[in-house]
Image (cartoon, rainbow over all chains, first blue to last red; front, side):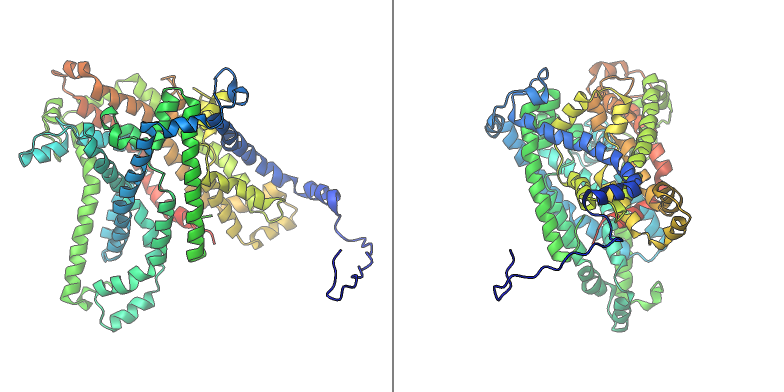
Length: 326
Length: 293
């Protein structure tokens, strides 16, 4: 019972029957469903789809703690606790895959993050509208090309006999290099390809931020005799700093998201040493070698860390800018 | 701002240097495509010798004849159309009504349902459980499996929902007065208003379907059902591994390189055809869905 400051019991108001009051409890729910059932009919397929294709696999994650047998199925295979995780952390290839994931992400971030910002600033300084439109059209294009084709182009261009890269090097007297079989070349080629494919498209976010800068700032700077260079440094860059920081936080949150599809297309046993990341490891161990339970354990480990990173990144971005991704 | 006379000499230098640098970046984006196109029209001998740089050398369409004469190429092309059209329609059928319901304030448990969608963007079970689930559902090696298994993407649902939420309720009042039900309001009021958002999502779906490779490779064993990207991958891998193929090619007018290049060109063309539409919408799409207050 609630007590008032004077320790006297509170007098409850006597309930009065209101004949026009909305129905309560179950009646209210029934009433609501009678009126709004159509909304639930619209929602239902989406929810069923999510349950069937995304939430059911989460239930299936239990194979990470089981000795999975195809014949017994997910639910009936025996539990074995953390055995797969113990094997995992004793597995050199898995440790190597984690290391490669972090290294490749790191370089993608350090080299790949500034390029779209630079591009957006450069596009912004182009005065000729036609030139600007055409160059943007071209640099956005690779984003829409499939990774199979991009990989096909890379394989062709870096081929030892016919590839254009070796042709160029040949002009300077360099002997042909079989790039894609050299472990030391994998990361530069992969990171470079990623920048070539995505930097243009990623610049759109920054261009949108630049478009939001108030023109009066530039007008008064022109009156003050500022050069374009000064305006870029003193107005444009500070104005888009929030966007830059948010994008940086998001990228750090997604650091485990290496585009493994592209790695599968470009790597080979000779380059596993530097190329094999967690998802390609899972693909080989699970989908190719059929060790589903063991590979699922690796996947769960990856997903949990990714989840923590993404959630923290979002919280950070929310704190920093009062905007979040969802 | 466009009057160059207003700028000092330093500014002009800056503007021209910048134009030059953008030009360099643009050309280096474009060049690989030009190189591949040139390669595809060159003779096998010149391609193997590494003599193709910018334009076709000893021009021929032999590589295209070789590629287009493969029934498997056409089969995979047709399959890609089936997956792209079927998959995009399936996505819209799930996303539009679902997102509309999620946008209605009177929906019970609205926060919960929204969270259920958003959670799939933060956490997914991963490759193995998804694969096992598809197998348990009997969706391996099936057109339907590919079409339905990737129909929904949380990001697209939220993008669509945000759009619906942004429509002022005054738009639907007239329809409500006439006694329209939810389906009619969605169909007659919201769908016409949402055309740009729907087009954006449809284009996202089309691109991801057209380019989809990994799951098609994993889930489809039957070569009759594989899409273009998987066929492309098999062919490129086979060409570059197959020593015998290279030997038989000594006298052929095409080579491993020119055939690979020709296949790449054939599969890029449809992307180039829809690209103008894509460009019109992706800016909008990013603005629509990106950041929610």
